[in-house]
Amino acid sequence: MINDYELGKIGEQKACDYLIEKGYELIDKNFRSRMGEIDLVVKKGQILVFVEVKLKTSDKFGTPEEMITPAKIGKVRKMAEFFLLKHPEFREMLYRIDTVCLLANESGEIANLNHYEDLQ
View 1: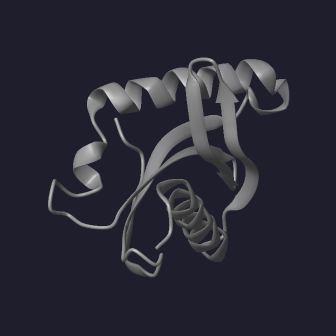
View 2: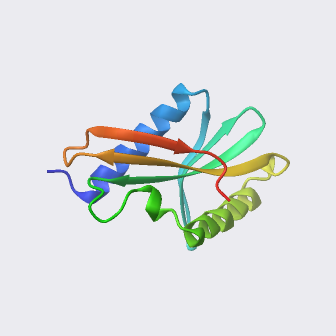
View 3: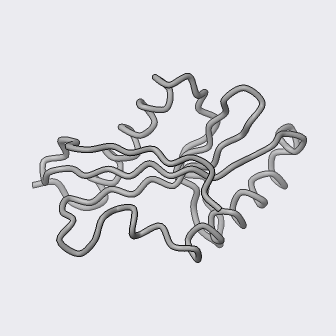
């Protein structure tokens, strides 16, 4: 059985692979500060996208989508603003916040992937 950390890394990689397949360009992974972390920073055209990845192995206690709360979106927004302070080359770009929600079995095989764009 895979531990939670390894499972999370598998989920992030699957989400990254999916987005690249959809034409996004990877800018950064696991951007961290003392305020938190952004799982993926990608770009499509002239839009910078900050992606929160949520993976669960069961929906017994709720779906991955239910883990994306207004508070979580607010935290990602603050991290996005911090990212832009650290990376002035992206400051003029429009940005949005997306999430990729995955359901996987305990060995890391992805059963379901949903991409939600432009969370408010």
